[in-house]
Amino acid sequence: MAEYEKAMRPEDLTRLFVERANAGDAEGIAALYEEDAVMAYPPGSRTVGRQAIRELWEKVLASRPRFEPEEPLPTLICGDIALTGTPPKDGAGARAQVVRRQPDGSWLRLLDRPEFVPVTGGPVTGGPVAD
Image (cartoon, rainbow, N blue to C red):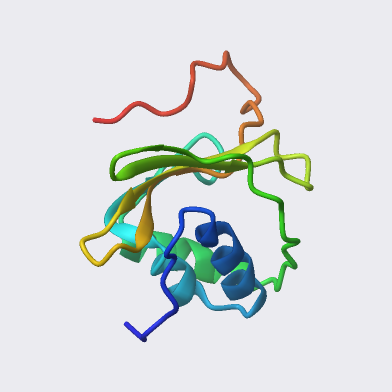
């Protein structure tokens, strides 16, 4: 994996995501996640692991979407774990991530729910359940 700027504050992850997404850099986006991270995307499903997250973003970025920076909500930090979020500009309901401080002091996403819009076709149960 290439050498990328690290998120030295939890809030940096949102900025780095937008920069890398707009550059079409799926590998750079994946570098923002822990190796075994879980992302609740596409809506109603899970994408597990950095490699799967990279592959998903390769597909999404193929259509060259444009992402707008979103102002982070206040971060909640408890030791080496933090909860980050942004009020989305695209009608996605909300965005939230659980991030973890790494041994070098940087932060990576562990759990990511980029959309809170209910999945149609059934009752909303709070999202996918871990195996």
